[in-house]
Amino acid sequence: MALGAGCGGGGASSSAPGPTGGPPPTPGSVTSAPGAGTITFSGYTWTVRNSVGNPGPNTFSPQNVWVDGQGFLHLKISHAGGQWSTAEIFTTQSLGFGTYQFQIQGHPEAFDDNVVLGLFPYTTPAIGPDGTNEIDIEFATWGGAQTQHGNWTVWPAQAGPAQNTHAFDMTPNSGLSTHRFVWTATSVNFQALAGLTDGSVGQYAQWTFAPANPSTLIPQNALPLHINFWLFGGNAPKNGAEVEIVVTSFKFTPA
Image 1 (spheres, rainbow, N blue to C red):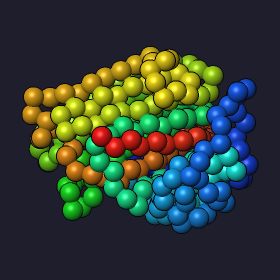
Image 2 (tube, one colour; image 1 turned 90 degrees about the horizontal axis):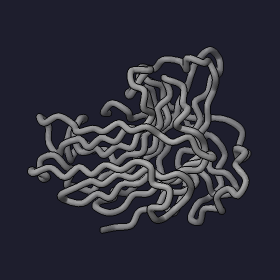
Image 3 (spheres, one colour; image 1 turned 60 degrees about the vertical axis):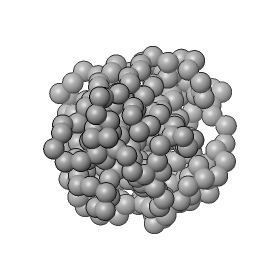
């Protein structure tokens, strides 16, 4: 996977405490306990990764993934038996051009330097190798190498050209935020917004990637969607603490 892809989890199946006036229940989700091989979240079926490998490398455990009674997706980076484990899920179907929206409960703007959350369509062997056909929303400082916690990246449709990336400062918030991108054949438009919204109220960062040669620099094929929560370089959090993030909803609107 490209820099910033991975996942794992584990923990009790209770909901994480939320801010006052938190998100409503998410339709299209089915409650699941940690350890399931597949989950249903926001109307999609997702495979839960159970393997050791990149990014990182990390140990990706189904014990770090569950859906609570509100229909919210929980991802955890946990420590047990002297080992850290992480979380990743991916859709069983491929999604193409359209609007991808994720709503988050938690504080990715305050993640430990080694913690990474990724939201991204990702290539398959039939479409192209790693380093191609990927569109990333990532929250990370890459071990403390950058001050910003927000990252947007578009990987090319074929091997050879470099990726195009944009880092942005995240806004401290109440613990609720919305992140989206609109993917077309000729451009990818990213937005970061404070609070839960289907519009543009609360937008604090935006980037449009619209190259002169989009068929080469923008993915053109439908791709599975991944969500992962992992440790940069496979390194333990610098603060030594387990961490959990909640994705309250995912919404895809085809173009």
